[in-house]
Length: 321
Image (cartoon, rainbow, N blue to C red):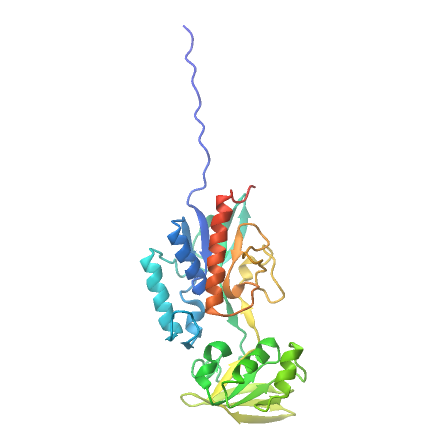
C-alpha cells in the first residue's frame, strides 16, 4: 500500500505587536501626528515621558490660527480632549532610551519595555538653554520667558531685557521693537554672532540699549520680575525691567538617536521638506527637527506632513531590507 504524502505547512514569520508607526513625544507635533494617524486607522502608539511638551512652557498664546486667545495650559487641555475624541491614549511615563534598526523595522528601547515598528516619528521637541542663575526658575512665566514671539505682546509698552548675542536674541529684539518701550540687550561677548542685517537694524534703533561684555548673574523681583543684575568691568550693575527674554539657544531632545540619524550642529534631526531623516522610515517634526522655527503652527504642520509621508512610505512597501 502506497504511503500517503504529507505536506508540511509553512507559516510566515511575523513580528508580534509590530506597529505601523510609533510617535515619540506628546507636544503639539506628537499630538497632531497622532490625530492624523488615528483618522487614518493606523496601528500606532504615542509614547511620551510627560504629556504637553512646550505647552507648559508657554504663557499666553495669541498666534495660533482659529484660536483667538488661550494659554499653554488651556491649549494642552484642548489637545488632550481632541486625542480622547479620536481614541488616542498616550503612553506616559515612557522615556525612550534608544532606537535601533532591526532588519527592515525599528526597535524602540524604553525605560519600561521595548516596541517594534515599521516607521518612527520623532517629535520630542527641545528645551531652552538656561542661564542657571538665581531667580530664573522662580520667575518663569512671571516675567521670565524664552519666546519673544509667544510672550512679547504681554510686555507691550514696558521696559524689558533680552539676554543673548546670536540670531535668536537679535530676532527677539527685532520683534520687540514694535512692542516694548525700551529693550536692553545684554550680550556676554563684545560682538554678535547673527545676521548682519539684524545687527545693523538693532545697533541704530533708539529703543535698544546694547550692553556688551556683560554676564547676567541674577533676576530679581517679588511676585513678578522687577529687574536683572549683570557683571561688567568687575562691577555688578542692575536694570529695572518687568520682562526678561532668555535667548541663548535651545537644546534638542535627541540624545537617544545620536549615531543613528544625522543631526545638525545644534542636535536637531536633519530633515528634508517631507520631514524624512537620513534613515528611511524615520521622520522628525517640530522643535527637534532642523526646521529651526519654534512655533506651534509650524510644529503642527510639520507633524501632519511627517505622518502623511510615513503612511505613504508604508503604502509603497516600507523598508525593503
